[in-house]
Image (cartoon, rainbow over all chains, first blue to last red; front, side):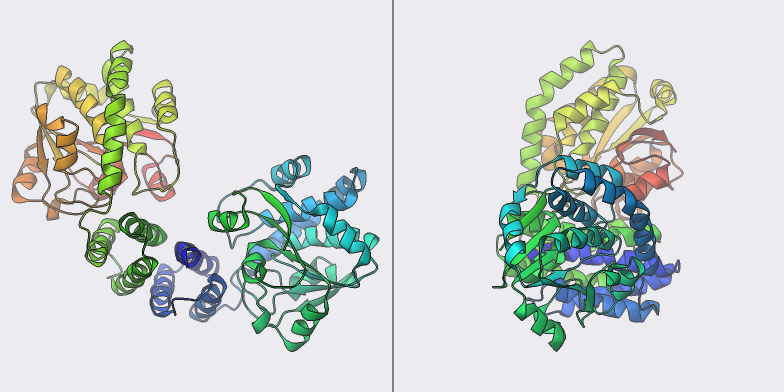
Length: 284
Length: 284
């Protein structure tokens, strides 16, 4: 429960952030906050961060009259990341171990997360540092082995912008495995999370099958996913899950999951056994 | 109003922080948060950050059954700061301009603020950096001149721990002025703000008259101060106000006020025309 309580201040911050993305009208911002306080005051005590965020942002979208408040910021980060694609591709090709380099880049791309933090970040610096340093938690050897024998691989994405980095990793993974690969995106807009539109914008749908999860939560929640996606999840023998949200919702799953993420929040860092800023490829 | 909306996430964070200082019972933490959400959802739109914090923390104190949740942390920082007193005094004596050095130290001490941030800080490093660097906003020349001619000086304190640094500055000020000096502390415990107990613990009451403001807000709010303190405030011809809270509540006052503070929050930094981390001695 400790974990959930620490999420409340962030939920309030995101509510303000989301409403400011849509309008400059401070009366609307205030009304959003007041409604959010009302929701938070009445939520069941055992609500997960994802459930809270989903409910809160459904309300925000209604109040601000915009179904996709992060639309512009998602487009902007898709464009920025696409403009880096050729350069990133070259870094991967020129590296000693191209799969490992692509994994590191996919983790570096996880910094593009306006959901987790409104702090400034220097993407080029993060990329450079991540490529140079070792993963803090590193199950790469096992991951590479499993790629060789997997028959159904599910890749659960996280944010817009970051999805370009995921595309680069998918391209490398395809060289290492004969497994069928499906890529899961969120079913509807939520925060800056990638949806089918983002996958199409960055051309991910040209190299792999992209499937919306049928839900509007900032994480993959099995019980809320569509029947088709639940079946895909169950039949996969290797799952890659990107980012903190998916870690929170899937870390207790019994499936064979490799979590790829950058630790951005103290609560999750403690849970996974790392520290904020760590880059992680962890098998559960 | 923009300013107040940005304060809401911090108010929620402080509520959690304050309740955790008193008890490990997570059910109480949750109840505190739920009550805070209820209060925030019902507050008038034009409430100031200080008003919000005051109301919220009155409720928290009641819910956790503790009138002074920050008591231990205040004691701890008084002790840490007292243990540094001799060393700080030597730095002042050995400096080229001892008044300026004492002012810089008093600003450095403003980092001891569990109300404004739960981030870690290295007090020795902050002291060292502050002494070495220039003030970002610097009305020192005017301040020193006014000290020479002032007849009634009011020093409005901020936090526990920091009050040791204020004591060192008061000692230097006394060498530069014949003015009568009164030192104002909060009337009742609120966050980590200094009260009469802290002033007594660090011996400030031995060198200057210390007067509680008669209120339980984390800032000096003229309209809420006792009649005696209001009269003192009005009759002073030179006022020193420490920290962000006092800046927020007094920056529109027409009195002759010098604000001494370290900018710890983006909203206030923008308002004063500086940036987070700046050390400021500003006359209004």
